[in-house]
Image (cartoon, rainbow, N blue to C red):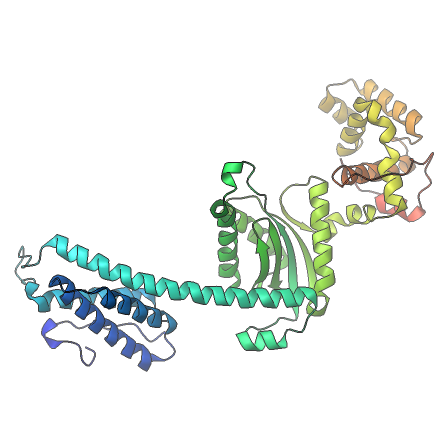
Length: 407
């Protein structure tokens, strides 16, 4: 039994403070907690409680949080202090079964609720303050890394270790579609859940700059393998209860600014092409990324299929045919057509734009043109060049487009 604990209570309690770094101070805080709860309890039972006493109890609870005393231990202390207050106020329960003593149940529950609420307010307020300070420090460090600024002072001042290499995740979260769901609380709820799950999985080592619509996450590569990051994104989406789309780039710390820009370019490409949510790696989209780089090649490719705008059934046939691996029977089944009709439409496409989907050289251009056209459709409108009269793009573009299926 701790020194100073009222002996007449007849209680022996072993408070778990071994996990706290400074056990001597922790034990002192716990004895003070018992004393404060005891004093407040007696005053409440006697009808002499003052608001100042409860405010002082809240302040003490904040100090307990600063001392890293577990909330479970604090709650045990609070209950013991209340129990002692009841006993010393003359309401000690008899050891005989069925005798509830002089203090009725409603008063006991009311007393316990008042004291517990005061302690919880002070304790959680301090935790929120500490969490906000930690989040601010982590965000400042993430901003410095993303901007290529020196980080040694920030890291040293806040006790944060900067890794040599990071996974860069560019993340997008859809906003609620309805106006009623666009309140601040509803839009920030998924963000809070994402941050909490990320902190839990990374043990607080992940750096992030996130808004309700997404942002950037920097995750030390030592914490997760490439193969496990799909499950991370799936778990984050499940916890946040929203679809999450992310792209992944691996980067050395000095290269973070350029790699982060590339990750967000890749994320923009994912959205423009209408790809599914989940995690997308650069290797999965290398062809699409290269084909959609700004320049005359992209402009020519994106305009190559414009003559088919007046015959949408031909354009849909081409999309479906490429998606089905140039299998005419599968395309015919998908479109509910006869295979000969598919052949006739492909011939018609060749007559209009001068590229034959049944020939390898023409197919490279048609696949690339579908990618460029999809990318252009999601981009801001601008003046485009006239489509080329034939296959005039550089040889390397044909090589990039080879063996890639896209619809």
